[in-house]
Length: 149
Image (cartoon, rainbow, N blue to C red; front, side, top):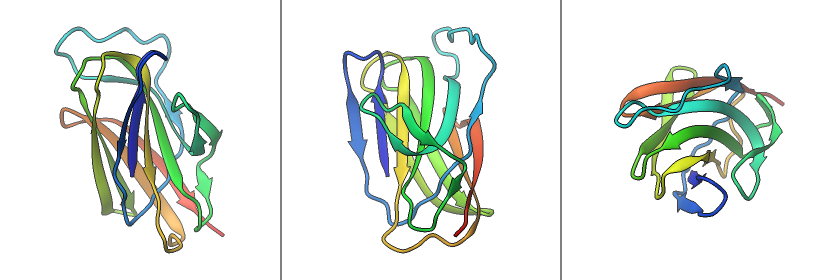
């Protein structure tokens, strides 16, 4: 799984973790506008979607909530004014079973996208999946998606 973040278009932080399992997600968004967090408050995730790819700035490309068993799944999350060293985690589930968890730590402050990737050498089982995006132990987003032929 890959966790990536580009806070404001001027710096890029990339963390790569290869996972054996994969999951995808369905897009949801918070209402806009979103007030920036005050120092020490929980991270704000303004926008979160699943997609088949992400761009160079980690924005989602080909947004979807339906994947094929051979797909790689991405979950792109737009965070608002994250502080340096903010931990953001993605927990991937198939049904109610936890498949994988990856944590990414921001390397610079700012607003931008974090992208999580989950892939598998084997086809994914058909069914309902979910990815939860967390920071400081708080679930910021829970996104459901489906794998079908």
